[in-house]
Length: 178
Image 1: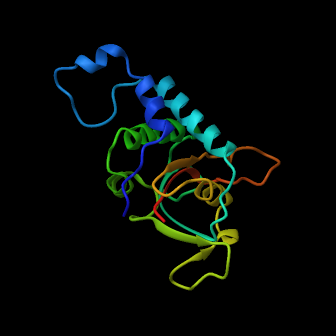
Image 2: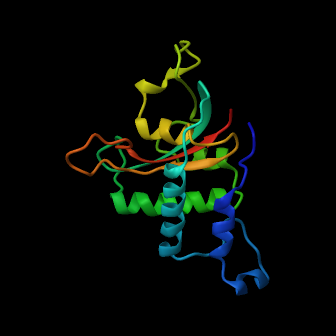
Image 3: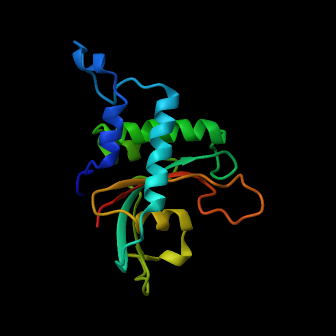
């Protein structure tokens, strides 16, 4: 699998690091300490930036998926939408800071590991690909806006009455690998 390729998210994450953090005598794993507000801002900027991109014309995409579920969408998940949003923001910051995405999926997803899928706009091949139209719209929308190696997030939108949600189960972190 290709490693995660940092993009504007890395620059944004670094912009949130206080200057004094660079002199920390004991660097540890993970992102620099950030407030919940800073983490949520990073998540919202990432979601908005991805939603503003046009979709590419590839007929097929392969990606790895990390789901941060919300209560009522995934059996056994008890997180409120606010708790899921903060966890999604923390996981995004960790991935952008360089944590291994496969390991994050293995340890944090509310789905199955490795969570690698191929969506196609053509005729799916059983056991290899799934029709984009048959899957959750938010995940496909994110995958078709990413370049290979980029990470994006499809936000939870299952709590809004009067519309068909694109991501009713939770927050979907999508790392495009092909």
